[in-house]
Image: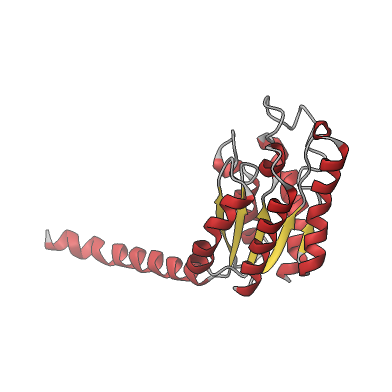
Length: 210
């Protein structure tokens, strides 16, 4: 038994030390927090095929040290995101916060003043914590009426301008309304649409990383 321990103990110890060092490096890496809903929670597809998981891979492939923390919950609203944000900021101490919320507020016909106030507070708290904010523009179907849909869409660019946040153009540009890229529910992107969504985010995120 002593001989077996001597043969395998050192390699096992080295593996353990390597894993420990990797975990320490990961924990010390700058964090990107994604605060979103089902569009970022990979609803209806394997989690590793969602755009947030693809983002982590792209960062590693291109030499960025950042770790991605996905704090997205399907069905979440701006109110839910706001309630979860303070704990996430304390825990992860992100340098960048990507806010992808609001679609469910709009689909439920919630007052735009409430949604705007929630998003504003999310941006304020993130910036006060030292994070740069990327706000994803969302849109809703036209059947909610032209006035509501137009004001809904304008909310995101107005908030980005007011708080000097970075605006990600409509997250589902080129995806929404395309049956080949949208699941049967007519709302959620398929796995083959996720690289397009990532490219939309990356076009704004990459300059911020540099």
